[in-house]
Image 1 (cartoon, one colour):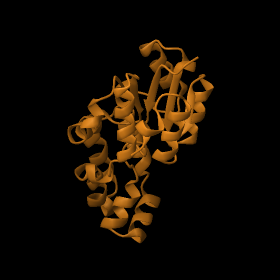
Image 2 (cartoon, helix red, strand yellow):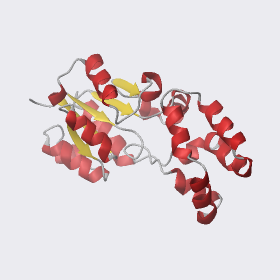
Image 3 (cartoon, rainbow, N blue to C red):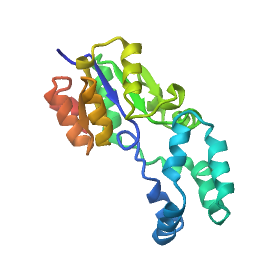
Image 4 (spheres, rainbow, N blue to C red):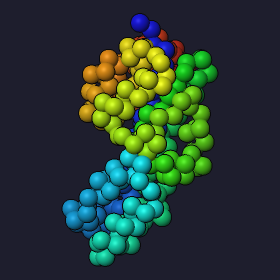
Length: 207
């Protein structure tokens, strides 16, 4: 079956998501490693991605770790600096697909408020034909339910979907549902996948 929709993850596919890099720049690698060892910051972020309030979760966590309070608060107050830079070639591919009339969806682990904030800065986040944001869905990848919810909403056969994600577990979960899935390692490789799938020409995919 031919591909009827292309689905993009956002973090590390369209926008770099490496919070450690932000803290290495701002507090130094040694202190960053100590903080991440002491505080489950990615677990904190998972709470946001499953629908808890962006500010409340971060400030609550900061209050639990007074020795790291200001650094944890920065996860909220300097959030766009954590969620950057944009991966320009991937944005080009999103827009090239839409220009060809290919439906393009987002499927992302993202909080409700943090996604709205990001969309106010990164205009391309408003360009998807459908947006599946975990904070609204109350479930995160790689839980099979989030993929099932996408299928129920878009009403397309699993084998007609092509999904790109930077995490192997998320790719494997999509494949288990019957989706076509690409492990995102670089925008150039993703471009090649889209060309090989017959969705874009080499010229259209070039950046």
